[in-house]
Length: 401
Ligand code: PHB
Image 1 (tube, helix red, strand yellow):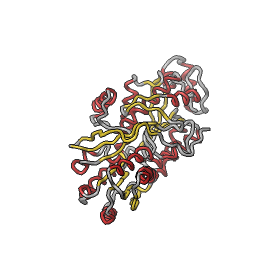
Image 2 (tube, rainbow, N blue to C red):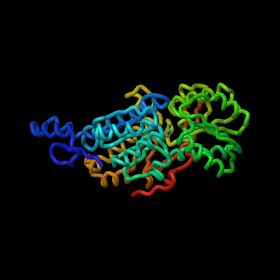
Image 3 (cartoon, rainbow, N blue to C red):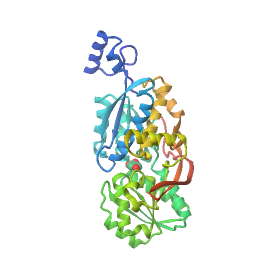
Image 4 (cartoon, helix red, strand yellow):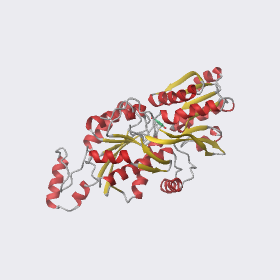
């Protein structure tokens, strides 16, 4: 894995014009600015800053930077240099974007991303170049399943994780039939799969899966079809701008008073305030709730609001936790990102004190965490209880080698 070469010591990195210039600068000024510059940890942020997931990318970035700033802008005692790429939630551009960060910017660690398809492309580059990668959102089950790797970690969730408990919750509410509605891409498919897993195990039946291509938000025709199917409830996976449009369209079609709508918390997080009355009453399951009554959550929310002028949401939390994850891991190896095995071991053993609650990672590098049931009530998202305690993704097919 990657390590920076300071003027003194450290491992070699590939010869390049920059390395030659650094050597010259060090010869002139062996303890000066060039050494300090070379000593920075290079963090590659590959996230969506445009499109339907733009707000998610910004919240993750802000959360990450908040955690680092709380530690005096240092990771493992070293300064931090950010390299940022807008991945546009476009899987086709993922290999090129990730390669740019690894080869051109020579980042020590890749942080990203939101979209599961993009994350899978990014992980391929991380595996091939043996670069450390920390995923602060994308839930692609395979990332910590069949495609797991020692250098790939996730601080967020697997798509199955918040979805599975919702199936049981819906069945426990007395619903016998459901229709699912999502974008046709890995996150939508896997989230629906998790819901079905929980719902059918609890005796429910899914009548039909409705999908639109990502990031299409033309829901009208399928909402008409949905109404004609007359299910007891609907499970929908959408997030960001698409979630906002879906909640509004669902209510505008008059469905919100006739067919209960459920989803993973991505359906409402970051958008329920703007959705207003259309979001009222929605119940969702997620590994975070705004009003978790812990000192850390309260402090985090206040600090995030002060820094950004925005309310924190699950994405801000995941960014913040990714910052904490890097901080604690790099502290353990005294900032030596090249100490591959020790860093991986440190990360695997960490207990992260998060605004969501304390969590550790599973053997496949995915958080083992409580999944909460929340409801939008009176314009606020309220915690109703724990839908599933300490839920671990099964990590199907993961063989760490
Ligand atoms: C995903 O693509 O994995 C994804 C995107 C947005 C979310 C959750 C999951 O809110």
